[in-house]
Image (cartoon, rainbow, N blue to C red; front, side, top):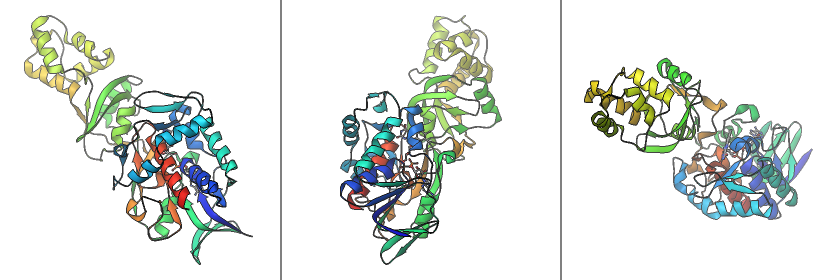
Amino acid sequence: MTEKYDVIIVGAGAAGMMSAIEAGKRGRKVLLVDHAKKIGEKIRISGGGRCNFTNIHTNPNKFISNNPKFVISALKRYTQNDFISLIKKHNIKFHEKKLGQLFCDESAQQIIDMLLLECEIANVTLKKETIIANVNKRDEKYSVLVDSDEYLSESLIIATGGLSVPKIGASKFGYDIAQKFGLKVIKTLPALVPLTFNEKILAICKELTGLSLEAVVSFKKTFFEEGMLFTHRGLSGPSVLQISSYWKLGDNIKINLSPKLEVKKFLNDRKISNPKQDISIIVSEILPRRLAHIICNENNVSGNICELSNKILGGLSNSINDWSINPTGSEGYRTAEVTLGGVDTEEISSKTMMSKKHPGLYFIGEVVDVTGHLGGYNFQWAWSSGYVAGQYA
Ligand SMILES: Cc1cc2nc3c(=O)[nH]c(=O)nc-3n(C[C@H](O)[C@H](O)[C@H](O)COP(=O)(O)OP(=O)(O)OC[C@H]3O[C@@H](n4cnc5c(N)ncnc54)[C@H](O)[C@@H]3O)c2cc1C
C-alpha cells in the first residue's frame, strides 16, 4: 500500500506536534508518526510533572550551539509570548516558579492534551507505535517505509529529539537520517545532567546526601548561581545541571558554597572579635552544620579560631568560596535532560529549518545542535523551530 501526504513528520514530541499543527493549519495533508505507545512522554515527565513549558526571559544567549546566532530567527518568529497565548487560549493555568520559568498549575498532561487537540483541529493524521524501516528520496519525494507500507511526501520533518532517557523512546534515528543524507552531525553528549566524582569526593557527597544550598558553580568564565544538591551519586541541582552543559572532561569546576560572603574577611574579623570561639561553630553560621563539619575535617582545622594561623584560615576560606573539584563524568543519558550537539546548524537554514542540501528535508527540536539552559528554554526551542518548519514544509 502507498499513501501520499504533503508532509510527513517523524517524532510526535514537542517540536513534531507543533510543526504538524502549523503545517496542518496551512491546509497541508500531514502524517505524524511516532514509535512510542504514548505520545508526548517527555512533556509528561518534564518539570516534575508540571512541564516548565517556556521562560519569559527567552533570548538567544540562553542557548548553546556551534553557531550561537542560529536560534535568533526562529525565536523571533515564534516567541515565548506566542506559546503563552496558546496556553491561555486553552485555559491552562500556569505560574512563574522562579527566574522566569513558567509551569502548569496542574499537570504537564494539559500541554499534551492541548497539542493533540490542536493536531486534531488541523486534520493531522497521527500514527503511534509505528516503526520506520527505511527512509529514501526518490523523484524529489521522500519515501518512508513501515513494514510493507510506503508513505510518500514532498516534505519530511525529522523531530526525533535527543538521546536522553532512552527508556521513554529516545533514539538516534534523527542523527542516522542526517548522516544518511550526507549532513554533518556534531558530537553528542549528555547535558543538564548530574556530575560524578572520584571516591574521595563521592564519600563526602554520600555523607551529605539530600543536603541542598545556594551555590555559584562555574566552569572557566561561565557560572550559574542556583541550588546545588549532594546525592549518593555525586552533585546535582540546577547550578550543577547548568554547568554540566559547559564542563569538559578532564577539567575542574569551581564551587562557591557561600556566594554572598567573603569568608576570608569574615573569619579574620571573627578572630579579632571572638577569638575563643570554636571554628566549626563559626563555619556552621555560614554553611549547613553537616557541611561545616566536613569542611573543617577536610581542612584539618579544629579548636578556637585564635589558635589558627591566617594561612590556615585562608585555606579554609578557599575551600568554601573557591572549592575546585574534578568531575570524573556524568550520570549519562539515563538521567540527562538534554543532548548537546546534534545535526550541524551549518547544514540547515535558520529561517526555515530546511536542509540546505536536500530541499524538503527539515530538522527541528533537540535533534539539532541547539541546547537550551535549564528553565523552559528547551521546550521554547522545540515550539519555535517546530513553528518555523510548519510554515514552509
Ligand atoms: C526528565 C526531563 C525533564 C525535562 N524538563 C524540561 C522542562 O521542564 N522544560 C524544558 O524546556 N525542557 C525540559 N526537558 C527537555 C525537553 O523535554 C526536550 O528538550 C524536548 O522534549 C525536546 O523536544 P523534541 O520534540 O525535539 O523531542 P522529544 O520531545 O524527545 O520528542 C521526540 C519524539 O520522537 C520519537 N522518536 C524517537 N525516535 C523515533 C523513531 N525512530 N521513530 C519514531 N519516533 C521516534 C519519540 O518517541 C518522541 O516522541 C526535560 C527533559 C527530561 C528528560
